[in-house]
Length: 187
Image (cartoon, rainbow, N blue to C red; front, side, top):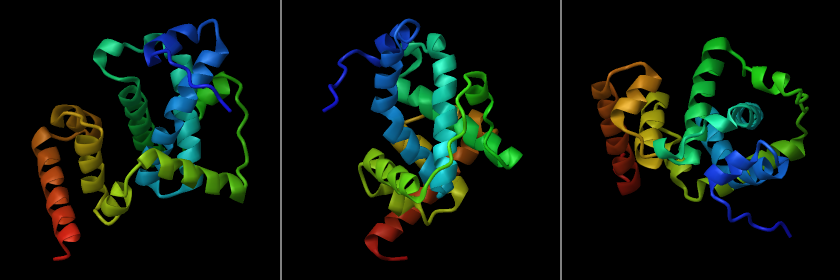
């Protein structure tokens, strides 16, 4: 049985400089949420696993840059994940610079590994929300999840998506309207 580390995320990241176990505890605490996030946006377990690995490699490299005053560590990780998703979509592949700098070798995933990714992502979701938003157009799905689940501001989302807050509001509104119709059964 793995003991639960009661240190705050801020303390775990600060302790990472001298204790690899601290980052391990931080990773275990957040990996399910990051996997759920990346899998909900890609729909591909192997891509979600690669993105998640790169997010945590970047977090390990930048552990000393985390500022709890700017928001929770999970939001910091999901912001990184969102950025990596955009970069991967633009490049057509997941960037692996952070993993290479840290000399973390790529890992070939087995079918069992991919099933485990999906299981962990399901645990990280905690609700059926991912299934509900799966039918939304990608731009609406991303806006709804960022605003409603991640509780990010319209301005923050707009900056990340390189659009205006008004466009983000419209996407969220349309997405929520579609979800309302879906849950009421009046498609």
